[in-house]
Image (cartoon, rainbow, N blue to C red; front, side, top):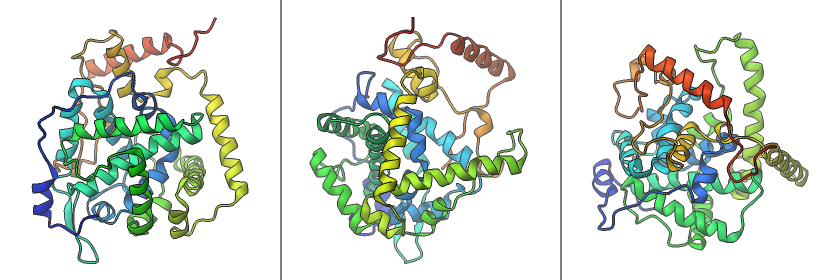
Length: 352
């Protein structure tokens, strides 16, 4: 990673206009196949922790994030624009610029006196690299695995995907092999266990106000789920990261994780796209199939996932658009009819 840059320097060097116009990924890409898959959610603790272990990113989370206050809503709503950079077609670059804009004010000085800015090119790229590796790890453990050629294709697609943000391409490795060296080097030399990381490991999911369930029952459901994700994270971490985090992992754990991954893979064989994929991805496939017009409104997070009222004027937050009662009724009717006619998962034979 480059030496610490002041917030103003980072903002000036983050965006680098290019002569060649970036072009979005499409339905034939492997990234479309895997990124919107709900199985990526099983790596929630893994990606949250490994992102925060990068010192400038962890410092930004400690100083500016409200993840601990409303973790479920924060993650659920943020996924919508993040998915959009992959699935929004000709509007993907616009979505990328929207995300870039959320990061302009995330800057400061950490506890060790190091300046950080979320738009520092190395910091921004590390976050993207973890999303790319989220695909690799999910496919490897829970979707049947990847060939080396598919990993190389996904690497090339992740470069194309990253161009949608309009950021400097300087930190991006040249090849899949170079990326593996970059990943190993960063894990070995730069990641640290900071407060933002330990917060992820010990996170509690408070019951959202809109969930009609007794709080003790909610806690009994989510506590073991978070524990299971922490166990999965331990298995998926690179050994050097696992050791730094003080996590134990045995050959027996590895066997159990692989068996669990195979069970998950088999369980998803007949799962339809409308359940397997994120709503933003489902809408993208419908546009690609001609079932929705190309300029159909993008799928946004439900309004109840909005940030707390005292944070809604802050530029760092994605605020789902407010919908009228009529719009909500229309969405409910549309969803009901969609679920009534769900189709088999893409690429599989229709049931008899």
